[in-house]
Image (cartoon, rainbow, N blue to C red):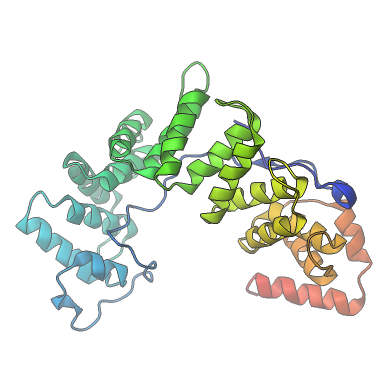
Length: 330
């Protein structure tokens, strides 16, 4: 399904690149299920801390990056209780990641399946991902869908989102946008930013629902505020153009810049145009050309910005090169 990334920016910015296509909703493999009360992501392959082996909670150990400890504690919990689905799911996670145990997709899938059969929604989602990607088990989209349905029955947000995508991609005769809309609504209500973004696309294009820009921008805003980068870009475009809400160039600039920082080429191009033209933000040619070069390196061509680039002084060019290098970590 072709989905829109946005209109060419108006006024001075009409000399935009050709309209890009937004990424269509795609199946979200995501990470393996997070343990309860997940804290910030632990460092990869972090060693177990001295004395931490006395802690009895494998999830706390995992959250702190003590993977070997988490693995041993989860294994002990399963040995003590053959129906401890949460511990089984964590074992699957560790085998999938190769943290605290050798990376073993087959063993990961086995633990996910065992936990899913005990009713764990996270495990059902993770096992569905294994089936979807053919990791440790034969690739089987139909079986993956059944696992996502299992997880969705318990309100798993990303399982609901994936089912919405499958309603579009896997329907034999034609995409079932109405069914997808229902799944996306349920997924968004459960907290999926991808589902909120997808609803914005469907409302803006009138697929499965009546065209409604007020609804569309509301869903894009929700996705953007949940840190969904495509949602940030769409929300910014609609704000700039005054679609579904009052025109707000300053608000649009903030969201373009936020998405640009997340390395989105479309946002980098739009941010460059706004900074070069002084629309919604103070003019800054060095910063504008930084974003332009980054977007151009990603394949976004823009003759108007190329023209502005040639007008820079030697010192400005040096400043742009340094800014690009700094952003790229060079």
